[in-house]
Figure 1 (cartoon, one colour):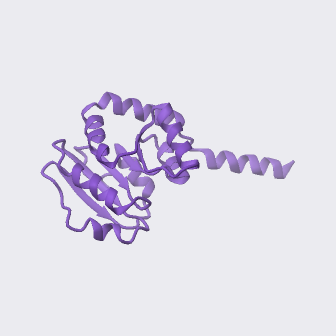
Figure 2 (cartoon, one colour):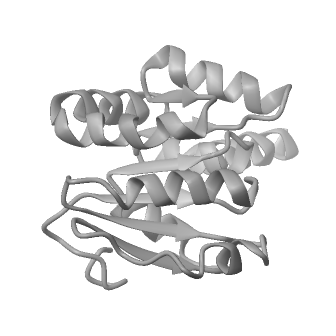
Figure 3 (cartoon, helix red, strand yellow):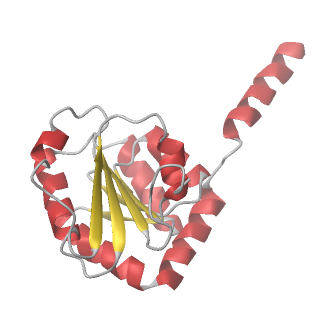
Length: 180
């Protein structure tokens, strides 16, 4: 997937799905990540947030962290597979997609209710961490990239939580009930 989408093979890839986040908070996270001394690549996906890319327009790659900014994409799954770490909200669809691919997460800004419950479950199982202060995301990313054993544990836990065949199981159950 990295080759298919022009992502580097030799350094970690971090993807920030920023469509549902406040522009100011995303900018803080991205600008601090670009100061990192850990060689890596940061992909920011604005999604339907039409003003996010404008808000980040003046930010460019750092000396060790390369930056790619994307608007709406039709290859979220490919990007999740290509990433070593995902930074996102805890919406139902994105968390299920990321867990199905066994990718660790840093969860920020969950809405009360379902997103908080998703974030709590993911954090409790060790498949990700929940951070409330955007300024703490960059140090957490750096820590995880510099501690590959911890990142590997999170990946393992994410794989345990993920249900990559859930849609097929649901369809099979429904078809079974229809045939009864």
